[in-house]
Length: 458
Ligand code: F0G
Image 1 (spheres, rainbow, N blue to C red):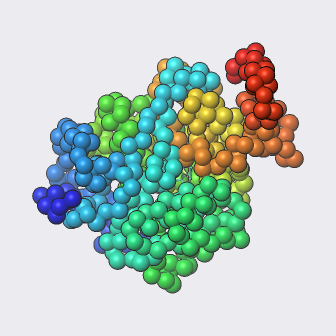
Image 2 (cartoon, rainbow, N blue to C red):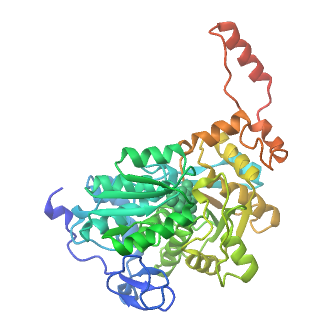
Image 3 (cartoon, rainbow, N blue to C red):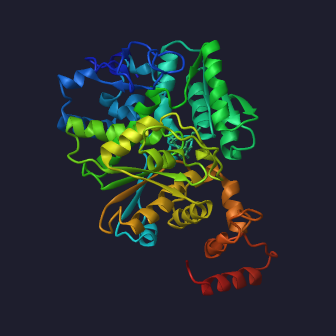
């Protein structure tokens, strides 16, 4: 890429950091990305949009055209939409693994199971490190490097750390990972190690890791890459923009998102609101958030006090990615639920396991945390919140191979042995396909094939 092609002929737009609580605007964020006046989170706003609105028709065409370009900034499925992101003077400064460009799948079997005519899944697990985190990381890691940081850091349930470690390595920065000891899947942990992160298994949970890291970044010149960093959310917005492009800018009725630290639901909601404001879409989808019943702070916050004050919980779920009791972005997520007319729902461990197998059986697959979407959707259809003829998109956040241990235990029937869900887990039997050990004989294989032929498909 030459200098000429990597520089935009005119600045795209300027962005500002604004507090979501008191509205104060600041030039540069503190190390903890919190407002110095009131301590609330910051968000990124684009004041120029109030005077010169981007031309939606021209941009749709430009974004489509960029798909044929060979420039890294155009090949990225995030930076392709850079008119809606903080701008860089020199696009060679960005760190990209060609993230985004994730598929939108029709899910016919899952639709039948949920009682819908049509169901889609936007699979963010098809990103370079296997989760949606890459779309935000390309933006925030690029900002870290532009600001001259040598070290970046995050607390994580696994996916953020895998993504951060990869982008730091690509950008020539060092990375520090704090993960809860024994509560992160091997797939995710091994990624952080391979990408060269200093990986600390801390003897606490995710919320404890976050508390420690917030102190560390006050003391050391380390750039925080958790989703309190608003640049992360700007990148994650682009999944919604890409989704609308895939739907030819016709808004689906519902978007269903898993909720952990609540950055992703906040980012997707922000994108839909901005697209509506700018005239890219004429209607908003309802954005609903599903949590594991054992890690349900947002559900409780909405149901018990209408979203006014966070109710933290001691989180426990086998969907380890969303084992979070004190979500940082809860206020942003409440704003999205209210602005889009979405709702919250919680699902049991057995419901998560069942939904994950059903998504797998549609030939798509995902990690447990992503499967809460289908489990929650089934309940929302039963309640009548989602209607039979409406269009629904599940946001699948992580790849099936992120947590193979969960999948193997499920199919071997071990997942709930010795837990209080053991009895309830009987309903999972028809979904289980344990591997079959055979002698090396043709007859044995043929007999197995015949037996499988007689077994009804579930
Ligand atoms: N799904 C997956 C696969 C995740 O890894 C996460 C969060 C979520 C859903 C929830 O998204 O936090 O934006 O509400 N994982 C973080 C991590 C916390 O450290 O990897 P959220």
